[in-house]
Amino acid sequence: MTEVAVITGGASGFGLALGARCAERGLRVALLDRDGERAEAEAEALRETHGVDAVGLTADVADDGGVRAAAGAVLDRFGRADLVVSNVGVQLFGAVERLTDEEWRWVLDVNVVGAARVARAFVPPLRAAPAGRLAFTASSSVLDPAGRMAAYQASKFAVLGLAETLRLELGDDGIAVCVLFPSGMASRHLETSAAAQPDHLRRPIGEQEDFEAMAASNPAMVQAVVSPEEAAGNVIDALLNGERYAITHGDLLTPVTTRHEHLRRAATAARGTG
Image 1: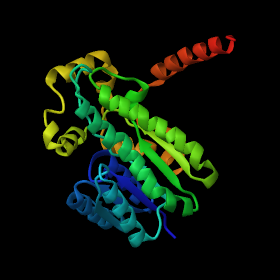
Image 2: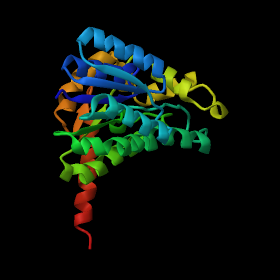
Image 3: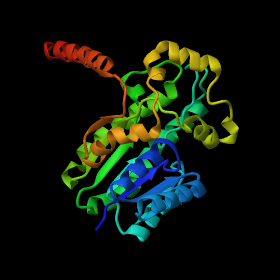
Image 4: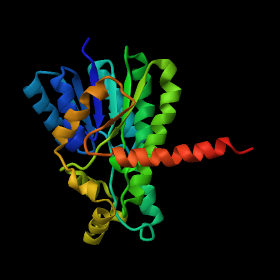
């Protein structure tokens, strides 16, 4: 029986591009998104273009009941889920002293608790799959951070921690856990973040000075921008193969190596203490 890929945030951007790459490989696809109408329109396009069964479903990861209902709809439609990509992430720029408690709660609830809601809803069918794979979209900023992105980056560090924990918990079930680290893409990320922002928190997702400060703190972050389609194409093999990590693009070797060298030295020093 043909495998089924489930992707949250699947109506546009990186999520939709991953869905298209899965459809190209012959997988059946479920696109989950807050914008259910757009998700279904894109699913119809996948059906027409690739000749695979695809469905678009309304699912807001901030709503546990909605996530569970979407998981049930996927099983009703396909009878299984083999690959689940928890891809949703909202963005909110601002200096740390500017971000309010309510803004922190919103970003963390969507990005972190939302990822946990998706995992909780889909782990049972993944256990039943012959080769279940669970993937989380983190960010290259976890590997090489920038300023004015504290809430978003902290949430994506937490997503990495969630994935590492689930890798331990699900290993005996044969479920592979992958963390995706996408770098800069030309997508609707800021637009969809603004649309998801609760009315009582509504403000610009970022001011011009925030974007300038971000770019000044990490110029490489804004220099390597590709399309979501290219980014997804660069990681689809790793995703389908259940690799532990996959980076979409960019040169992150220096920041990754530097961080781990500092950690190695700290670990070495700790080993020499009482």
